[in-house]
Structure formats: structure tokens, C-alpha cells
Amino acid sequence: MTTLSDLAPDYDAVLSDVWGVVHNGVSAHPDAVEALRQFRKGGRRVVLITNAPRAVAPIVDMLDDMRVPRDAYDAVISSGEVTRAMIAPYRGRVIHHIGPPSIDDSLYEGLGVIRGPAEEAEAVVVTDLDTDDDTPDMYEARIAVWLGRRLPLICANPDRVVEHGGRIIYCGGALADLYEAHGGRIRMAGKPYRQIYDEALRLADAAAGRPLARSRILAIGDSVRTDAIGAANAGLDLLFITGSIHAQELDAFGAPDPEAIRALVSPSGARLKGFMPRLAW
Image (spheres, rainbow, N blue to C red):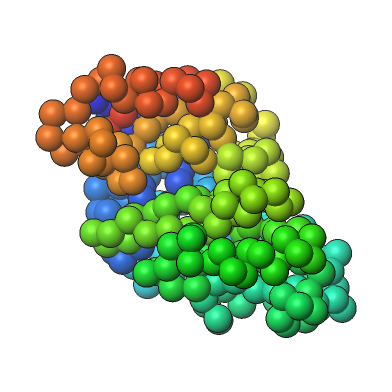
């Protein structure tokens, strides 16, 4: 296992995942928060990069509510923020929203889209499943309608699953995967796609006040599908957090097998620099 303090001398900035690394959806991980604060000492920079399907401002509010101090990070970029550019062309037109009815309202703020039924929509926008108890198969009937109308699906949260307290729940990415498997067209801009990384890297450069060498930026995350593949696509090294969505399969808090962790991450192409169950300094 590797701690962030072991790696810190080799990096000028980190792009850290939020859900599963900084908090578990219910409360912050104090050791992770302190690790980011320590990393920032000496002028290093921290950009939080999250697949949360909403704009940045409510994410900062959520971090405040969890008592994550603002001196733990320099900037935040979200999947919701970069996905807004995909929704903007539908101004004045009907889109069909899938997800909690109001929590993700900031995604649409100022875009001028009309939320309506699938039968009238020109696109489906998925933030998450409607409730935390839902599973993707529960949407088969609705998917048939979307397919029948050849609606594109814009997914504002590419995560398949996420840790929420002591549970693993499905996210919007799982529904997008099912729609694509049925032949539907999907679009995503969050991790692991380049749009969100390009913006995160721009924010890191801005926070540092100079262009940073990509070899001096470390990605931190808990998901192979999003964080590891995203780091590989962006040319960044990876610190992998094993104690979240992969905790059970990796025995993260017991006796994890380093070879099993490397075998899990390796297909992503990420340059694995270390792993630990929870981020700590």
C-alpha cells in the first residue's frame, strides 16, 4: 500500500475523485480530507473531479454541509457541469428527465429546455435512477418507448454504481449502458471522457498560475471504469482507492492481494502508482 505522502514529492497537483474518496455520500472521510489539505501545503494544487450530475455550486454546498473545508481543494469540476454543453442545443425544446425530480435541477438552470414526457421529447437526459432502490432492469418498458422514438440519451453521470453509506447503489451510467446494449444512442462527458479531464487540467493550471507537466499530476479514484480509464486517457498516473465500490472483491480492509489489484486495474491502461483502502496522508 502507498500513502499520499509517499507520492507527494513527485507531483504538483492531484485530480481527486469525490464520491468514494472524499466522502461516501453520507459523510466525509476525515483522513482523506486531511490528506488533501496536507498535499496543498507548499503550493501543490487539488482539483476535485466528480461524476455528480449537477452543476458545481450545489456540489460545493454539499461539501460544506459535510464539513469538508474549502482549504482542502482549489477547484471543482463535475460531470453535470460539462454535460450542460450537450443539453444546451435543446433550448426551447422538450427533453425527458430521468432521475430524482428536483435534486439535479441545477443541471438545467439557464438552459431554457422544457422537461416533458418521453412521447413529446427530443432527447432523454439521465442524471441517476429515480430512487436509490431502483435497478436498471426496472426501466425496460420506458427504454422501449425511447428506442421506438429513436431518442438520444444524454447521461450526466457515467458511474455505474456508487457507495452510499454502507450500500452500493446504481447510477445513471448503468441505465445508459443498458440503453446502448439495446441499440440506443448515448452521449456522456464525465469521467472517463476527455471533456471533463480537459477542464480539470485547465483548472489545475489556473490554480498553479502556470502550465503543469502532465507527468506531475496524479489522479486519485476508486473506479476502474471511470477513474482508471480516465487517468489513462488523460495520460496521468493513478493512485487507486480500493475500499469503496471494489472493496468486497479486493478484500480492501482485510488482506488485499497486490497482484489482484494490479490485474483489476491493468486492462484500463492506467499507470498505477499505488493503492490504499482509504485516502490518507
